[in-house]
Picture 1 (cartoon, rainbow, N blue to C red):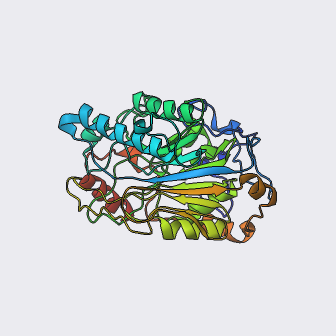
Picture 2: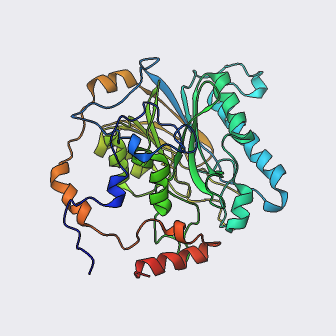
Picture 3: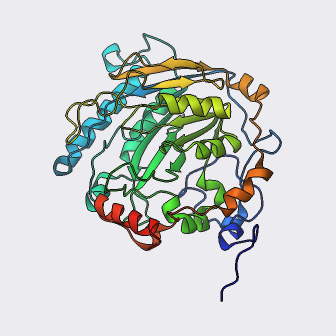
Length: 393
């Protein structure tokens, strides 16, 4: 008979957390952290209101959130359609910086933007592709696409955040729903995996992009517990990105790790309400980047979930400080006093001792590591996998 686990008894997964000092800059899995033993890294959570940072290069930052279309690349004409989407993305970055080609790349309107935020899939778009198709659509990081975006970041001396489907040589046949931040040097400074896929919103199907939760044990063994909910500690602030919708506890944990600006990038619907709630609840700045109306995206109506309250920048009190004008392609601008926020920040107190026993005792119906055992080829296979595991199969 197996021994019953008592409350607070150490498990294998808990042992992986280990001890030691965490890195200052949260780089991506597959970058400097790859191959590091998980026990060498400690979870970099705030300690009595003090959290890890790097010095700021300026007291306030200008943020631009681009509300752009979702247009899926064509598998049968991949090179041309990927190029068209990338060109459109670069054009919008130039417009957000007030420096389009038509103005000889001179800034003739507005001010310099220090951070440009884009939604989940500006370059590849979205379709219910099979795994075989998705592996064709996904690209490497770094790769030509990220390098061209990086060239814009270097030219404009800014950070650019965007989402994509990515490949990784350490994860063959997996396609990772990845959030990427490139910095003023033109290089990637953070790659942040999607933490988990929400369940039950897609009828009989489920998403097939790999998330942290679906490969949790191997992920932690490779990168450490701190990388499961990463925070990029940059010289314009601590930035986290998430493509996970309706997950307030994940947002709260990112805030507890020192996130000062949370970029929420879910496509297919407005992020305004969720971004407002996350900002107010966790006393952080949020950017909710929605997509615009998106004509000619096969299989979906032109609206693509876009709403007039779509893309927003929210302050820690829940006030909207930047907003798109409507549901078309647009840019929301805001100025964030990041140094003042950091100096005067007060964490919302979380009674960890009170709620930790509940979280440790709780057992979800859908357990982690599903994609370590089975990589579904289609959304339908993924849906069946979800149903099996939630039935205890």
